[in-house]
Length: 165
Image (cartoon, rainbow, N blue to C red; front, side, top):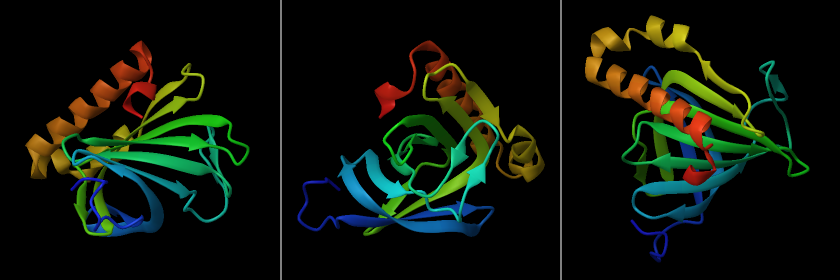
């Protein structure tokens, strides 16, 4: 579906599914949908402040999020309330599925953080991914997820993620 279609809603609900259950759902403003990539903008949808040690997500932060129907990841550009770029939080996911005003993404546990200055590139939650059992249940999906993380890390280290956004 094209973002120029008259039947495209201005808002979407992003639904993040993990291990078969809805982890979080939140409203987001649709920025574009070219049939392959869906872009949305949303405020921090978590409760209060979430301090990861390397970044803090807090009320007032704005996430510009990019989801692909043909890639195994999503990229979220994170800016503070004052517009300062905090960095990019990348979820390794199955390709996104859009149905009307709902965008469903299945989180596969692996994540990547890239700081706003590009100096810090951190692979996250590899222990959770290993413990999830995906490799045994769905080896093809596990291989695609691992490959997506490697691809994003290499891109972040070589040229940064701004080209994806």
